[in-house]
Length: 555
Image (tube, rainbow, N blue to C red; front, side, top):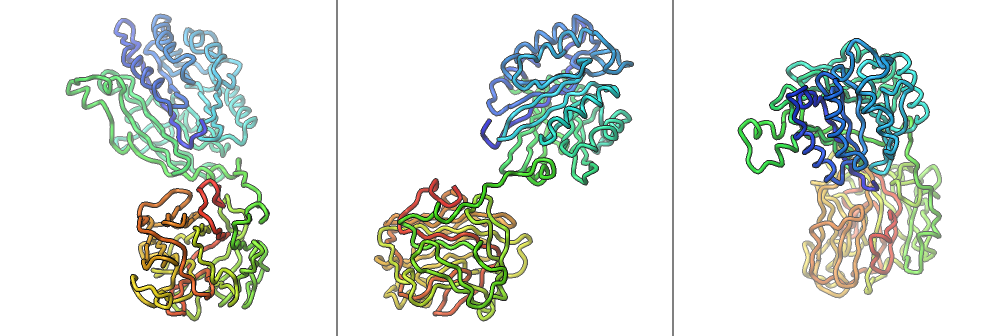
């Protein structure tokens, strides 16, 4: 799956659906029909206690029911204490369970990685959300030999995030607070805490459901979850829990429901009551920065820096990047215009600007400038073109694209309302414009409001107007790409390649420049400067035509 979203389905104890002559596999059949129909489900894992007594008849009926997903949905199954002799570990030898759900069942599955020599522990490797994931399905009583095998699998796939599934690991109190069981403590001490790649464990066996977060030897979070509904109406009715991974939002959204009840056109009171569970232990979200959590064993591969020649074309009017700036930013420091058109920038108030190695992951140059901001215009750091730079008088009558990378600090401390990002000096009144907010406003500026709304306001070269675009509240603590695109008729602002909502439809042709300098890091007002920019700024490029999002610097 190339998408950044996928679902892991978790199926706990189904034993009361396979209980001698009281068996009823129909709820599980409906669950399987549902899962096969859901395209975003990448894998399903059963947490053990498939049956109540582990007899050949029960196992046979369960095996036949599972054939509904064989070859259609990758999955794992593990033995619970009701599927085998509960007094034995994974060295118990042949059983009806092993014959039906042992390694031979999964040989043709594309995710099946292998099994321990005894056959009761298995490993599954899937690709979803643009990366690989390892699922370890461990017997309810794993032996020392089994632990050694599991450790070897983790070592062989040491860069792959791993999820441990087993039957008995943690239990919870009535409030849903979980703690390790005796067997769970052994698994934790002997395996889980030593392997940083294990970030999530799932087990059944106990009820009520619950969860906790433990710290492993690396000091990182391991999420420990209990999922079991056999005490609910109809033995849990093959209820599933879905873990919806979203690698863009850095979130796992968890839901619990019964597809069997969901499919019914009319429901009894108990069916309606058990259709979906929405308490804090059954429906919740986990915030997890996947890149950060996995960085120690699988650091992200960042794109290499790109030379200026790869992003400069005949339509490029100006292009500035900061990887060529000396370590010390001083008064008069020059940032060269790499388009070759002579629109060099000169630093003012260098004490408020510093060079940084921080950068957007897709930025051509691996460097940025950090601006300290401030309301005192005499102390705000900024960069401006020379008095005779060609950019100062460029009208852009055929359209333009202005794009840059920026990052706002987290926490966003202090009052930085209406801080300027870029502008052209020159009062709108001097350009003969009357239809605007204030005659001393610059003819073009990009700013940030007190609510962190991006504001792009321009006085066109042709029309007597001031069309203004407004974005959503920009996030803090993360890099963004901002682009203003004008096709000669109207302007549209993009954030991270997505068009914002409030772009005016009124005509806007060109920019009413007056031959005065272009400025980064502040907004000109009455030929002076207002609130300075607070945050990081990366590459800035201006072209004399409208670019498509796939042509932006971050593409």
